[in-house]
Image (tube, rainbow, N blue to C red; front, side, top):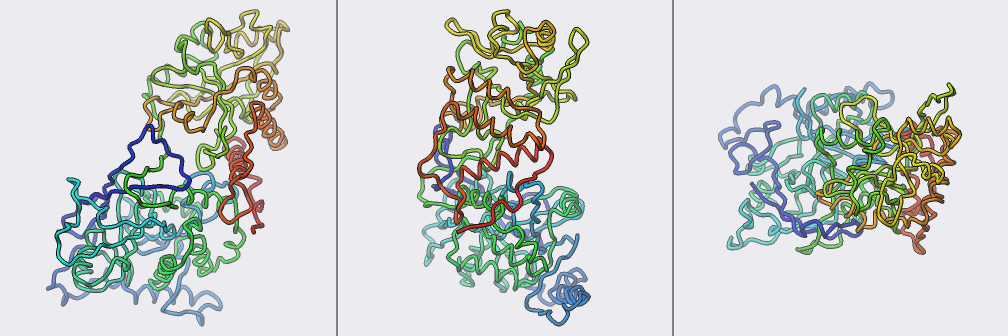
Length: 627
């Protein structure tokens, strides 16, 4: 097992240094053929190593099917059956859409999906990605590496460590020169920022030692790991520049990739090795900035499979810009100085199922109002309003866009958890209430967050009000009670809402109905809500702004195509009551005229369209003119 020490200084990635170690040691291992000293994941057995006596053994049927001659013959058949294509076929460079044929050495091209914008809102590194299938076992697992995400990070041999922490390369080895390895982002599994990074090296070195230390993917494309690459270099058969080093991979479980192909999320492509090497060499030798994110490589291959018009149709799209912002944050490095800090990854929030159900159930509108405050503490954030994206940066551009310009009411803040609800996201559904006199009223349901009670079909809702008359009549309980202050926002039960409306003390417009919760654990790696506050992701709103913000939010209506623009404007107006914090020198997305803050605003809108309204309707063709 090899260790891989990675010390990072990023240009723009926010760092939570108060909660993380400044150093990280990352395991980096891709399996060598059997007999090597490197351990591997038990996914799919690599090609067995050949001995020197194997050279006179005839090829098996499988070897023939995987040979260059067979692939070129198949390409001739397919391309020759396409009108006008047979005369243009060149055995030295070809590519075609192979349908649903998945095999090692195949290329996967991401398909742009403008009607959903998924890769614009999440996992941006897959947008316009070009992947090489490295392993495929039918019905078990498929594995590949992203080819078109080069970083500007270079590592030396002293960055690779053994499991005991000693350098993998011994300094006393005679006549050894220090190698410089450029890193490509290979995927999100065991990735560049994992504590168990997997390293893959591609090369075309056709010698006995290289073949024994490698696995053949295509004719003239072989795969090894750092240990294998060093064996080849030590044999004086190659230099570090002859290898392309990838950190991380993409993986699909049983049937997952085939399902995604059938849903037309990807194009499966068969290409010759010359086509692949042409693109990799261009990435290595060109002065391109990592923020270009390999988009031209994707476009080139799309043209080769006859989809040039499709590629041009989605140039400079919303997802292109978020991909560039991802590249700015994740693969653009200022330096590789030892001791620098590592970027922070999204934290998966999970709680004990029983505990979570008990806590969230206590906030249900059907609960006794007198018990709703038991879990709160006197000190802390309970009862406070927070607003997201408070500073000049846009921390929720690439993930959790729902928090961008959000207004969050904290319901509970104790030693273990912080629980809140968002107030500014009306959904498409309403809560019908039958009054005591038989009338029925509808109250828009608002999206409070992504957490609910596990295993419960009908999620609980909570009701809130900020009406002084109802406070005087003790309708509900303040979210937070202190000796010096009564919270302006109160939580109440459905029964109290019905009674208040029936008796004319309030109207349905005076109440908010919330479904879902936002939860932060205090032991999260990034420090929970406190870490978010320290990083400027959220800020506490001065209580003097509460009434004005509340009244503006009450003007929002049930979400629909017709109400979308107005609801978004009102949400931003309410957020802006506490100050706009406008940046006099706003940053722009790389090589565009779009500011990062504008892109974040649109990302929020597309999130609302995709996840609350049911489909993105405004992303196509908005971004089309660039300087």
